[in-house]
Image (tube, rainbow, N blue to C red):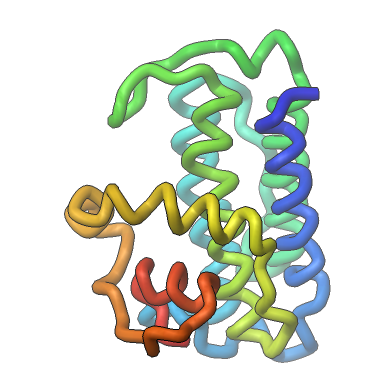
Length: 183
């Protein structure tokens, strides 16, 4: 098993717990991302990830149920497809050129998808009243890795403006504020 496969498995399991824990009727609750509801957190992943991963590496696209009809099933289909790719030694090293450069497939999933799943776990938890605690080691890793990329991240349009937090805020709160969440 590769490091990217293990990391994805771990963070996908936490996201899966939040997806499966959404209370009845809560899929329409407002999410922290402006204009989104809880269902849109899953929709976001299900819509952009296959285009990047399956499209760029020319892999068969998984059959994904409609997020409107079955958000948990849609997430499970995407999760299982990505885990299958990461667990396949013939695929993880396969390279493709995408917007920021040329990457092996396993590294691309680790860099672009796993982190997104990790951060959106908080969004889904916040929207649906579940445990918002994120893995503190990954919070530290993500926060320290993002700090030097502040200008690039803001220019990408994928992150909102930083929000203010007290000086004594914990690192998870600082990370979420850095990516534009109001905690």
